[in-house]
Length: 193
Image (cartoon, rainbow, N blue to C red; front, side, top):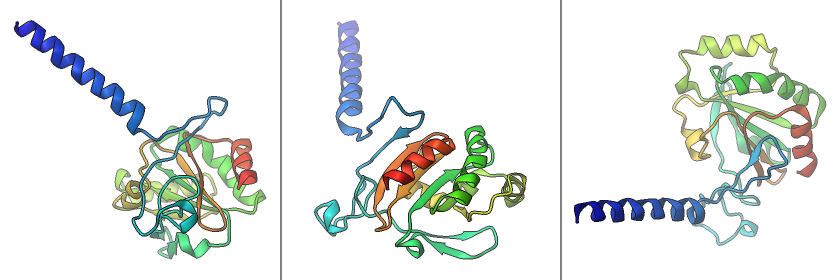
C-alpha cells in the first residue's frame, strides 16, 4: 500500500512539473539560430497591452527603465537613449561565452548605429579590478555599467549570461537573445529593429 502511495505521489509531481514547464513558461525559440530568443511575462499594471505602453519583457512592451553607474562613475539610464536602437548585454568576466562575444560586440558598436549598454553582473565578480582589466584587454569603448546588486539583471529575469536585450527607438523590447552572439547575429537583430 505504501508503495502505491509513493508511486502515485511521484507520478503527480512529475505530471505537475510537465504542466508547469509546458504551460507556464513563455519562452519561444528558433532552432535555426545559435542564440535563443526568449520573451517573458513580467508586466506593469498601468495598462492593458503593448500598444498602450505596457512595461514588461515581451516583444512590443516598454523595456523596464534602469539607472546604473559606469566604470568611470557616470550615471546612465536606459531612458537616456530613447530615439536610438539599444542592445543591453548582461555579462560577467568569469563567463567564457561573454569573453568570446566581446570582440564582435566592439566591432558591432564601431560599425553600426546602435547603443550598447554592457551590464556587468558586478556582485558576481571578485572586484572592480577584474572588470577594468577585462575592458582594457578587449579595448571596449561602449559603456560598461555596474549592476552591483544584480537588481537590473533580476528585473530583466536574466538567468544565463551572456543575454542580450534589443530595444527599439521607442524604448520597446524587440527581442532577447540567450547565449553568445557573433557579429552576423547582432547585425541581423539590429536590421530587424
